[in-house]
Length: 485
Image (cartoon, rainbow, N blue to C red; front, side, top):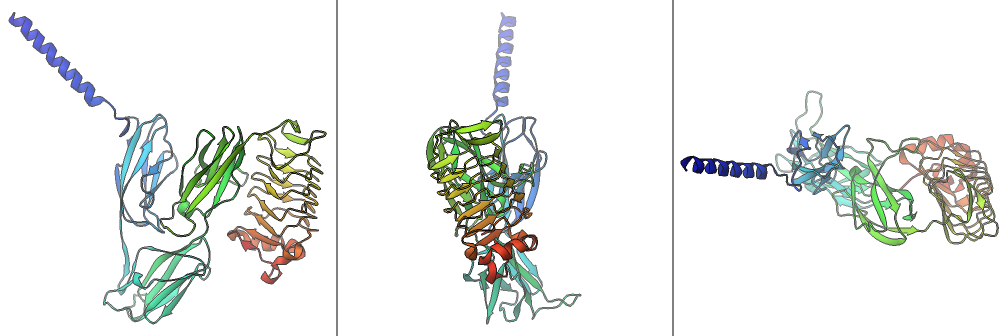
């Protein structure tokens, strides 16, 4: 009997131990996963600082997410590394968590603390923060300058970028006026009452200035059922943005990375837009937030997505070439090209004078006279076009603006002759080849060109003859293109 009781007690103890062991090994899917191993579970940064945390997850991880992007942002680095940054411009001190999620649903967190730091150098101290300004608007920045002996009496502006902003001194008060929209840089001061260093320099200090620029979508939000469309976003501050309010029944939305010179996403590129895939006909509006840490102009953007049925029955398509429109068909309103089409053949849409807009989707080449005499065409959307043939849009009398994509490499002779263009935006950083491509435009006296700010001189050089002959709206600007706003 004693032996039987002892046996039962041992078995009961084993059962309790087993239960406790099983309970202690149970995973909480919301707080962690044994497949995720973090090099660090907590990091501390100064304002504007950055660190990298290595993550081990055999099945890979999704894009990391910060719970408060004003405190810190997180992005994917090379391999499986998470880069955590405090925003150099517009960041704030505080604490947040970065969520790491594996592709099979496991979750882990990195705790992030961001502290303030004061930039100092002997006689002068400039608070390490960012000043957000609008173009042409003056703001006072005196409160950012501190003096160890109390009074700012002999602090002068040492240097600043005149393309970025202007700084004005009025007695012991200092003011900044924004100039270059979308530009970020430092404004420097020197304390001429301070003690010079070994190089004979006065103590210096600086703070960051960012000139706000409108946060906007480059392409419209129109996409076809079953098609995927890229929508690039302009003036993304600090390479970070978020979106919310997507109706997943109508379309899915995901981040899109920056493109290389041939239109392919860079594996380690920044997120510069979104990709929208249409699921069923419908419309919804969702919100995008530019991660600039500032509640000023242009931070939020509302984008409306319209998913339409793509009718391929009106077209003659051979392989990936759209050869034309079927006999007797008159295209009206907004037209979407099927996603599989890469080329628009010669005269394919010639004399389709009723349609008002066309979304070229994935088209890479437009051949000779493809849209000749489409008199009512007001909007052309092209995201992937590389070549525009001769007289491709000849006599499109209602066409007043054209936005040419970053992928563009060549524009044929008189491609836009007979149009009413007054504004051309070309997003290619390398100027496409031209051959009097904008000759014969009805409104040449008003025609202006917008290009990437970094490529203005390249366009002025390579397109010199084109600009002086056909962009007479730039005459008072020395035939110099404007930066894309």
